[in-house]
Amino acid sequence: MNNITARAQPSVAVFSPDKETHACAVIRIIAPLLAQNWQVIWAANQNHLSPWYDLDAARRADLIIIQRHFPSVSTAKILRKIIGLKIPLVYDLDDMFLDVPASHPNYQRLKGHSPYIKWILNEADLITVSTEGLQNSLQKHTPRPIRVKPNLVDWGLFAAQPRPANDQFNFLISGTPTHRKDWALIEEPLLEVLHKHPNVNAVFFGELPKRFSNCASARFIDFQRDYQRYASSLKKLDVHAALTPLEDTPFNRCKSNIKWLEYSAAGIAGIFSDMAPYSSSVRNGETGLLVKDSADAWLMSMEHLLANPSATSAMVENARQEVFGRYSVENGSGQFVEAFQGLLGQPHEPSLLSELPKFANRLQARTHEVLDISAFLDKYVLWRFNRK
Image 1 (cartoon, rainbow, N blue to C red):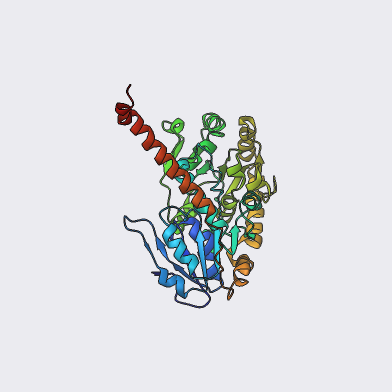
Image 2: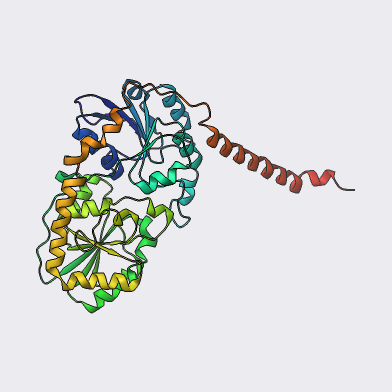
């Protein structure tokens, strides 16, 4: 059992597919709850050949949180036990795992989670999400209440001053391989900027696209899955502006503005795709730049930052003030945990019909197995007995 803090009540047992050091764990649960002196117990570890689950911690908890794509065929047994404890149950997620695009590197794996996610969507006493877009997309899958809890940034973890202007200007492009399709939007205009301006460089934090592998103005830094290390690395990077493109898909429209929050706190200006995750919070030209998804638009935005250093500095300062005031753990954690407090002391009542999506999926899989066996028998065995 990983008891993250020895202090205070109430206590929360968390069952997540991620380690407690990873971004979603810290952003969605650990940072805001610890700021309100809640006790957080990470009750699952799926990163070994023999995963373990701390059901005793769940029994002692005032609240149980199931996170992200933890629901799966491999966790169905422990989920059934958790539900049977009759302790208030929250399902928290920040991605639309029921509408993952086929181009996503984890598409096949996440597709298999869908019936189990639907099961928990129809079982939880409360579903918490990071955006209104995600709330609207999930509503058709469950009658259970869905509450939007916007992401907050830990100011103490990310805060840094803007990088001083000098004869170099460095763009940041950060993300895991899941963003390959997104990066395709900016490859051409970024290469044009790098060729045109010898003093401009690109720093890729996470993965280097193939087109930049031989580019002298591009460099690569390994991504940090540990969130504290990621924050520490981001603050130390000598970068002046971040490029954050998003392909316009239903999956991406449900994402949050977390990169704007992190970059702003870390003193980095940003250019963002003009779609829901950012258009709902970034004020174009004041706290960042919003860009339509065309090569010309991205090229013009990058050139604008390069030609207007004072405007770039003003955007960073405006964004820092707004993020700290409205989106920081330091100022927003009380409201973040408000809905959790309303569940305390209310026993969970298991739903009789909640397992139907999972049952339908298992029945379908079983049917395919039977059909496959029938086809095998027809082809290799039964034909011998059907000859005339």
